[in-house]
Amino acid sequence: MLDIAEELRAWCAAHREFALATVVAVTGSAPRGPGASLAVDAGGTALGSVSGGCVESAVHELCLDAITSGEGGVHRFGYSDDDAFAVGLTCGGVLDVLVTPVRGHDPVRPVLGSVLEAAAGGARAALARVVSGPPAQLGRALAVRPDGSYEGCLGGGAALDRAAALHVRDLLLAGRTGTAELGTAGGLCGQPLTLLVESAAEPPRLIVYGAIDFAAALARIGAFLGHRVTVCDARPVFATPARFPAADEVVVDWPHRHLAAEWEAGRVDSRTAVCVLTHDAKFDVPLLALALRMPLGYVGAMGSRRTHAAREQRLREEGVPQAALARLRSPIGLDLGGATPEETALSIAAEFTAARYGGSVLPLAHRPGPVHRERTKVP
Image (cartoon, rainbow, N blue to C red; front, side, top):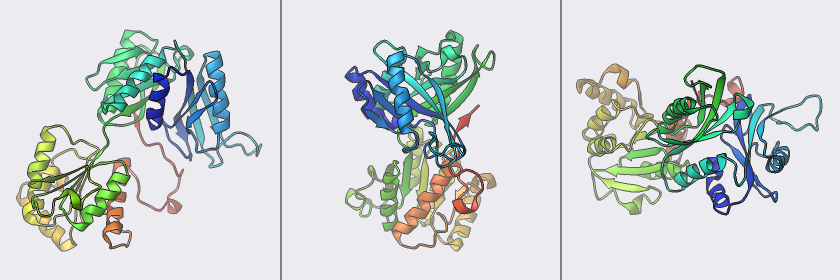
């Protein structure tokens, strides 16, 4: 749903009636993952996509039916070997799609609107909807904030809403979209219930230390991937906005002092990628000694193998334990064979993207199993 949040917010503000179809589960290979949405208003206007084209027409019809009837539900689409003209996915996967009517007095409307408003204002909020459980509760929704407060109801009583809000808050604070499993009585008691949680959170951070040409290329690709990019260097002659136009901010400070301040302010988390391009011991040793003790998503450092060996020895002398040293990606990046700043930036971005999603970094042609894998499922 968040992939079309701006347009949906405008529809809500205009009091348009529509139905929202959202991918809630994927089995095998499919072009889009959980959270991908298609919205259709009463006049047939469509926003977004659930499959990249494979089943859009069928889902469009389901949305129109939901607007008329006021009834939604979960629908499954998969490839059919028996009928070449059947509605399905040519890639061979299976999609489960939740269709929810969002009309003038439907209970999901104010909940959805609250999350869309928060997302538009840059605030954190999560939308949780029942995608599996008692039929009467399908599509019921909660809007959850970082402090654990919430609005809406899941149709199972206050205990269920409180328990669900705790589960949802964990996903929200991690900035993740995924599913949460609990019981209709709250906790694990009662009939099984599955929530799809979509988190509206700040973009993940990419912090690049070292204002060099490689940093400019990395800032460009980081911005392209949707990260908030910071470039930091202690040398003011190099750390200038003019040299790094793709960065959201350029900071003149000692790297370790900057990272410590960001941590104290709560501006870095498990989604943050830190790339150390200084390959200068006076900068990178105190910085890495600090970064490797933080629960960051990725810490990489540029340099030759000889530089890495010397740096690792200095870090041991600084008291960094072996378990923390094992988290350091150095020499930084994947072996793509390129050498230009842009090619190097691509290899670094590929590595921190794989780290974020648990990718194998194998060629898809050599890795068994479906091409598109489920990214996140929280118990």
